[in-house]
Length: 289
Image (cartoon, one colour):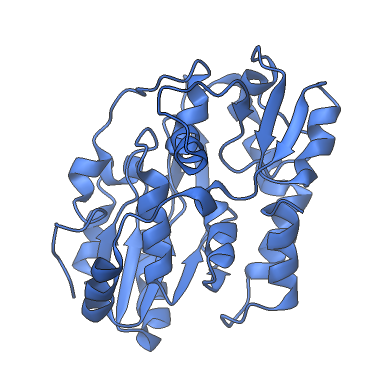
């Protein structure tokens, strides 16, 4: 097992420290997870350039749902993940819509080729797991002992089990049970960290397979980066905080959305094969065309 801290995703406590969102974007939400910064770097634009459009972030798997903050922004256009989002937007807005595909495609990996070889030598074959995570306004609760047992069973086919925790869960102390089980615990960093997608890209590229418990961007990100993904059966309770914004009032609708069920059905399999159902789901909900 590798327990070094010199890799850009290993020092989980420092990377997860809460921080304000510091960005030059006038629509500050554009730089959640560093989306705006990644797109500007890819396009060769100076970091001071301000994107005059909104950039959707997060799941976006609900039918007929548009975040009011994006819809009401004083910009004529919006970047969305895929054309399937066009219908939801056209029902509530006349903004011009552009499909980017998964923004992780545009991010530069956090690791050099030499560092990739060094980590692969340390880890060997790797199962990378993404537990369902909490946010500023939602607490995700689940039986960690059940997840540990599940990973111990599934991890027998691999040299290393790596658990990628969201920054909020690191702050809430969720790393301890995974470390005690002997798993490697990492993080992509804080959601306001512009290097978030770069770290996440390298982590996925290091893995032989990835897994999660609920539908999220880790599904599409893994497959588009060529890594097989599965969803494990883990019961998760989501509880919103009392100060949660209005758009968090429909968590049940998110859980029951047609799209979520469709993706979930495709990825809750007993093997790692990237079958036609999985590929079709990713092509439909993560890609440009």
